[in-house]
Amino acid sequence: MKTDLSKKTIRVWLGGSFDPVHLGHLAIISHIANMLNDSFICHPLENTPVIISLLPTAQNPLKTHSTSAHHRLAMLKLGLQALCTNPHSKVSGDFSSHQKALGKGKNYTTFQIDTTEIYQTETVFTFNTVSHFRKVYPDDSLIFVLGRDSILTFEKWYRGFELPNLCHLWVMPRVTQNDGNNTENRNHLKKKKKKG
View (tube, helix red, strand yellow):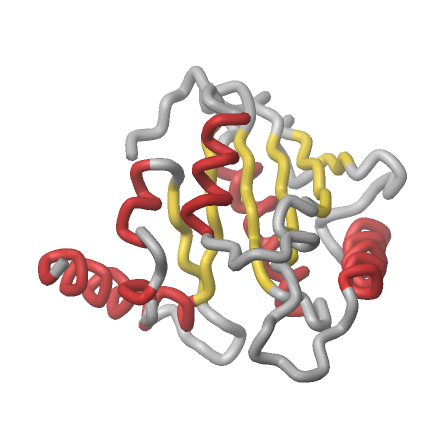
């Protein structure tokens, strides 16, 4: 999918159970915010708003002791508050507005919690959620963030290989994974796409 420079907003989602939310999740969204902001200095997208959403999934039926949606949302709110008020973080400012000036650029990033999936009782497929986002935000640039472990099972996802038609997919390594795995991720996707 080509990036259209006329897009109004850049919207990023990081999905997961967030049971519990941890520093790794917050580090990922902080890194993405700073990366997007620093990339657009003296660029046509320099003043483009960025919205980064944590997208908690519904209760996992495979877990016998899942934390309630109410408590997971409360943990996410506390996590975002900690991220946005940490004096040592590049992300700082007034938590009540969720808008933070980042780095050297002029972009403002909004951090939020997206409850699209968390209260659903039926099985939730990423394809359906992203299709919904594409309909709601037809003119925006959409980015869906995946962990490396998710990409290794991508062929099992419902219509997973159609997701790049709807949004940009960004694969982030886990804290214990090194950058050398990024080439492995691309090769794995190419191999699976050719077979399917």
